[in-house]
Image 1 (cartoon, one colour):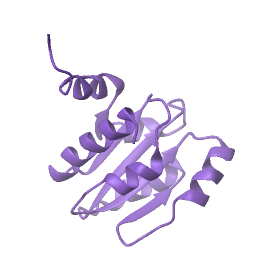
Image 2 (cartoon, one colour; image 1 turned 90 degrees about the vertical axis):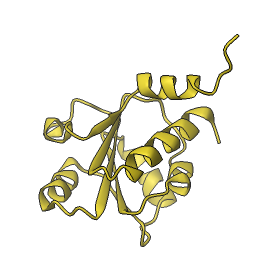
Image 3 (cartoon, rainbow, N blue to C red; image 1 turned 180 degrees about the vertical axis):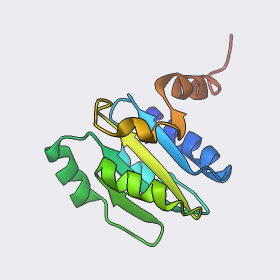
Length: 130
């Protein structure tokens, strides 16, 4: 597992255990989404939304990732809005955003955020100081 994916898994797991309603991941380089799914430990059902991905990337993700009892996968802002509006508290929503210029995306920005600065700080905790 690469360092970026491992850090994101750690941060998502910390937030999921804290009973969050949703997590917004944006402006990060590509990471291993299959490894992310394998590494997340959550007491809730997890819905993963891949937003702003190219059609080619979406198709590849749909071939790699299949719904299970614990994970559901979606690819549109409208689906993310529907889930948020339904308000089910037994679900944690994980939004992975590639294009922040998507219409209606602003209505989903109130979720807890994981950004590059947070990932950097998380990784630096493990580097011994001299």
